[in-house]
Image (cartoon, rainbow, N blue to C red; front, side, top):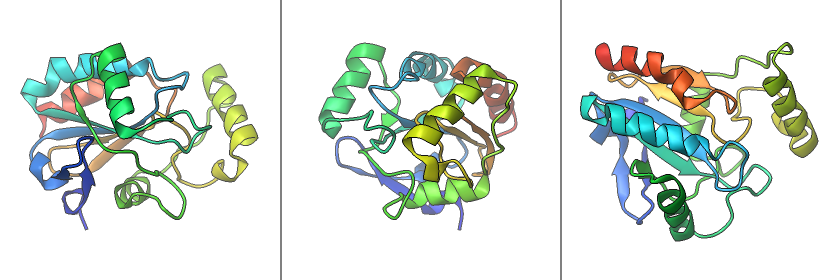
Length: 184
């Protein structure tokens, strides 16, 4: 299987096949509207505006599995992202990114690019680990998505080349995105 074998349902209810993005660099992100990381939507939109003409596609996957931080309907999520952050990149309908009802794309992404662990020296990572241990202790081990705003970078050939955890700011990924675009 390749990433191009997967699809998702867009925020407006349309089926979107990832094969439509062949030759483009993709950044796939699970998003939420009421998370401390939600302001990352600003920088994600900035990256999209800056690099979409060069072949970058960003797809946001709303998910309500982490402390119920993405309540409301798909339409409410779409309106929230657009009104508060000017989001113009693609959004899916809400999905589960872990557990028995995990979207197949996320099973693929986490298999292709596993969790590298928390850095005990980094205060942001220690804080996130503590939150996960308190809120979802079953999620601390393994390659599962740990929290909202986990990001996967996919090159123009469909290879999952990098995983960024929630605390990684989108602008800190810009160098990797530019390199992926250059070599797509």
